[in-house]
Structure formats: C-alpha cells, structure tokens
Image 1 (cartoon, rainbow, N blue to C red):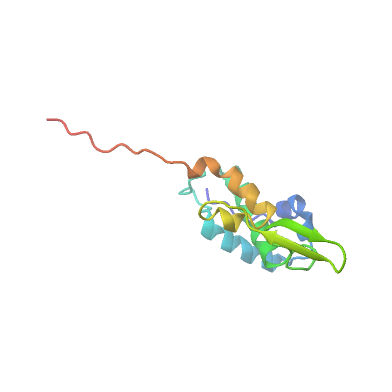
Image 2: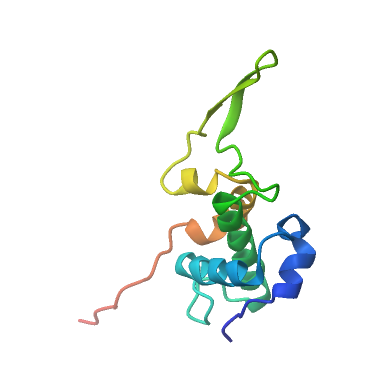
Length: 131
C-alpha cells in the first residue's frame, strides 16, 4: 500500500509548522518521497512506520526551507556565542555521507536515527551451483 500524505496528522504532530501553507506542505511531501519511497517497494515494509518517517522528512524539508518562526533558522551545532552585540558561531557535525544534510535540523537527525536499521549492509546469497 502506497502511503499518502495525511495533512491533519502532520499538523497534530508538528504544530510548529502551522504557518506553512497546505500547498507548501504537500510540495514538501512530494520532495520527501524522493528520499523515501512511499510505495510497497520501499525498504520500510510497515506503512505506518513509512508514513511517520516521511512526515519527519517533510518537517526537515520545511525547517530547511523556512523555520517555524518565519526565519531561515540556524544550521549546524552552535559552538560559540557572545552576548554583547550578539554573535553565534556554528559548525556541522562530523557525520559520514548524507548524514550531514540530515543533521541540519532536529527532524532530520530524528529521521537519520530512526532509519539506521535500513542503512546496514544486507547479504543476498547468490545461486548455488550443483556439480
């Protein structure tokens, strides 16, 4: 069963995106489906879990596009801060491969952690030759 976007469930789980339009969230869903297949061909067999993961991706993409408070938000881990004349320094976490992209928001990091079982090596045995 192909998972489709449940806008009402997304808004309940992620109320911080109340200011993001339905049209934008639907567009983010389409984009999220580029990263995780919503169909039965997905590595994630359980449709309920697949829907949760896709919603995490929608939140991640929405946060990258525009923060819930209307700003673009800070990307990366804060490594320094000052108070007089306000300054904030950030750096990215030293993560392998595409993890750096997901680490830009808390939603992406949640997705990355939740999908760890799907990034492991899988052995598929070949044909056995009978002599």
